Amino acid sequence: MKQVIVIGGGASGLMAAYAAGNRGNSVHLIEKNEKLGKKIYITGKGRCNLTNDVYPDEFLQNVVRGGKFLTGAIYSFPPQSMMRLMEEFGLSLKVERGNRVFPTSDHASDVTKTLERACRSVGVNISLNETVRSVRTENGAVRAVVTDRGEYPCDAVIVCTGGISYPSTGSTGDGYRFAKESGHKIVQPVPSLCGINLRGDWREVQGISLKNVVLSAKRGGKVIFSQLGEVLFTHFGISGPLVLSLSAQINRLPLAEISLELDFKPALDEGKLDARLVRDLTERKNEQMKNVACGLLPAKLARIVLSQAGISLSKQANAVTKEERSRLLNVLKAFPLTPVSLRDFSEAVVTSGGVDTSQINPKTMESKFIKGLYFSGEVLDADAYTGGFNLQIAFSTGYAAGNSV
Image (tube, rainbow, N blue to C red):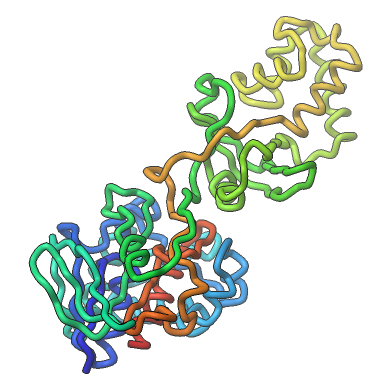
């Protein structure tokens, strides 16, 4: 039996503690917050989208970074295994649109309670309100964990401290410090799955949500992202599902080199949209353009689009020239947006970056040069799109670490 200490009582920590305890080890989980799973409580808008019910090959297609590293862990403990484990410990689940898995109760707290129940069933000792100060190593091996309450000799330590997104939940980068102090490289953490600040003032259109639009990103004239979905305008720029996915793709690129475009009418090619414009301008020839454009877009957004196309809001439809119509067509199909920065970590769903996975054994999550030191979850440089994929990464890597101890 080994003395195992798990640092962090979030998704990966609870899973690592359960897996280690299930192998007959003596496990002590240390959490600095007053309760377990603090970040779990806010996932899925408080409902907790705990995984995505797809098979590993499709799952890995939704991983933005670290896919190769995660392959073994995802295949060893896939979403279906996670779902079975939760149900074995009394949590009823349901699958919604996009294969997203939620507790039937729609209460994130039930996910945390179930994970805690699993840990208790294998004898895991849980300490709350206790902060780990350091991980003590000697001669290339773990020796002890030092907290604000004392020192705990141990054979293995699993670091499950998360990243630095939503710092109010306790994710303050402690794990990066432990990794650095033991000689590991940290890939610069950046926000992911977050809104994008745009140049200009967007307060006039904040709150407008557009479904079935195409958002594209270009770098050096080359399209690096283009997807159909939903975009939400905010006071700072844009957010919504499409934007969150885009942020994961561009968060390590120089935004000065990135240009964005919105196709408001992707279902219509340029020919069909032009015919629609001709019809609208003809049928409403005596109306002002600010009113005619409302047939295409919400009123406040229509005004911005007309301005971008260089068409006066008060201009009558029958006075619009062929050149103006062409400009309007171009703006509707490729509305330009200039990204300035991503929203900060306080709003990012996950952290991209972290412990360099080239220094971690992908089968066991153990450090390649410190015996008995493991890392799992968001502290690693591995992240995915929204839809339960990031929590499953936490569960799969936590399980790999705990099971291999």
